Figure 1 (spheres, rainbow, N blue to C red):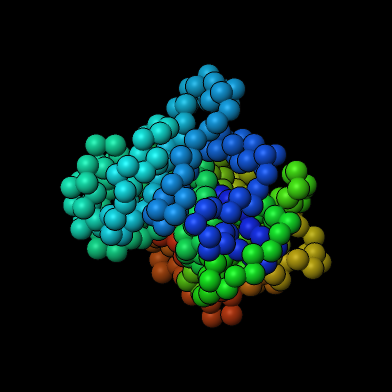
Figure 2: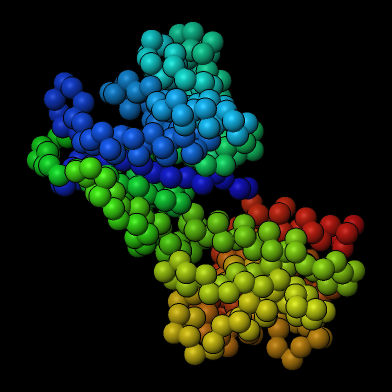
Length: 378
């Protein structure tokens, strides 16, 4: 299931704190950075904060610039992005500014939390969605994408929310404004908490001065391990599924898309079945053929394919699983296990895994992968 693009945004002190322990909120950013944040808000479909941020900071989460709001409405978008929060308990102040400013709001909660929110009258100001006994970030992101049409989500805190999204490999970008001061209080809230992170090593994509703070933008690019997929994995596999739709139609072969991505997040090549007027070329084959076999990035690369790589074919001497092994690639992410339509008992996942390749299957993308092949599956 596709998710929105998730952008984590925060301002931190030089020693990594979001705030101090005083009664008033510590302002880490200056006017120039506040304007930058306003510009980012104007670009997104929704802004999310955790319940703790609503209690501690009482934010309005508005686009303050009239010109930016006018540009949104001129483009056919709501004047303000959707405002989103998550609370397992539903213990939120109905008088908070979050509910009474801006446009539409939604709160994700549990059945017990939903009862509490409705009793407090918050359901009159926001759409209350009970997801289950425990809150699941993937369910939140699926609902935002599929039900509310959110394609770009800005997450403004707090530290617990940022930590959970990074640890579960659900963040696509991190924007940090580094403020020139120290907090030094061990009881103050930090940006990220302890635990195992699936985001891997982040790639720095931009650094610039904004007033007296430094903006740093990072992308999580290193893949997850085992059956765990990162946000980058989902991005590239979704692209592979999109490429499958570009294949010339066929009644005797699947439509497949593939992308080869280096460990640092750089795209090395892409391909799709039957491209360049070659009626029998496979997607992985087409993509790998565009890369110098001596490229030192291949052993650390990942092949993203909408269909598991083939192990048997009549049109070429080497199937795609063999091509991947010969290229030295050690990781494959795929959406769809090959059915018995043309080959009985195909097992590209098993063949690659037996040779030490880390194979991740993301079945939530199977529908996208099968869409251009439905005429072969009836």
